[in-house]
Length: 465
Image (cartoon, rainbow, N blue to C red; front, side, top):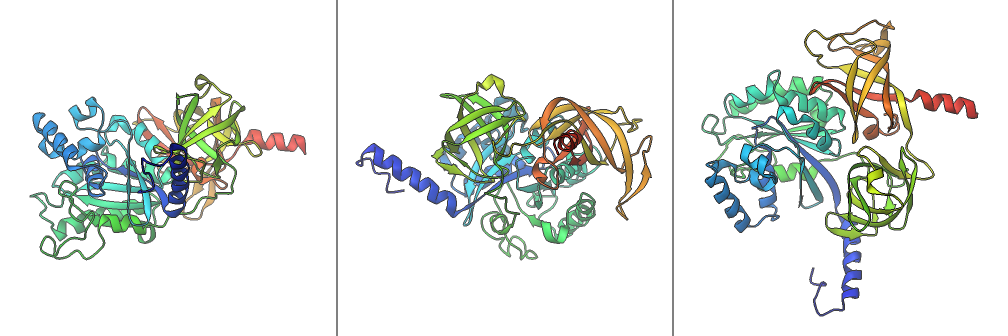
């Protein structure tokens, strides 16, 4: 950092800074972490503690938050104040927007996406998880709290299922509040939680041996987070601490040479039109000509930002702000995708999908004509199930019934889904992160699915061949 000396001419510093950014970028991998779990499990507190321990927040800021929390007679919440930024959240002690913060460990730069846990806020959880590479599922070990989060209606179950569908392939299950008086670092309690979670994680599609790791911590005190647990505190734990576990997670690599894909999650005016999102495939350079789908607007990249730093180039997995020319911010909606001109992302109004029905609303049956809200990458769109093609037997993976009239909870089916507006998507087999989705009704996730094919694409192909 010493190179940024005030004596040097500004231009030189700027060049060095850009060089420095690119070197930095290539040195450490970048991962998005989403914190998920029930409303009071301690996600924001744990996130706040991570920022404090990794030096992102200084003591004075902590003292300010501590005082603020005291004034609101919420003393144990002061760490959460780092992650919860708006007044409504602080007043309620709940995280509503997906908070963002950054920290680094030995080998990795992390962006924390702090996903809300309250039932009515699950759509925000979806936008957080759809950008995440790994999930930290925070569970409260406090007597009664784990049970509330885990039972039907609790958020733990729904969040795990959503995380899996949205492509969070690796999960750290953090058993928090181990310092609580009802727990006192009890091995029995920790084992009980693990034994209840494992079967459930398996049914949600996680390979527990390979993709899931359990860790006991105290988010409020910061125990077993940056440094390993001392034997005095807890004699039975000899596994890693949270930072070590995060560091050692291996995630599938995205293709930097693939077609460029950046689903837009937000846009705003800032010396031109700026869009935000995560690069799911390919790379982008300053000066590139790209296309925004589905409205086929040709745009030019004027500037690229990672966090606050301007960079000349960015690869897959990065969260970017991209300044564009050639389009007005009013002509962009969340869910549009910035993509390469030579190989733009397909846009469709109907598609074939494989769906797993999780839990329908009371007395509802799943038939053709069923309407729901579709969430796929950053798209939120109303849809209708037009056709049930076949029900699949999950044990044999073979069809067990053609054209069923209706299906119940737990069924796996192939079906045709229609939406009113053109939306961007890929086949799951080509781009998992742009081909998996959830269906929600009245604020509840009723099904998770993957895109098998787009019929409109097929018919086009046959007409051009």
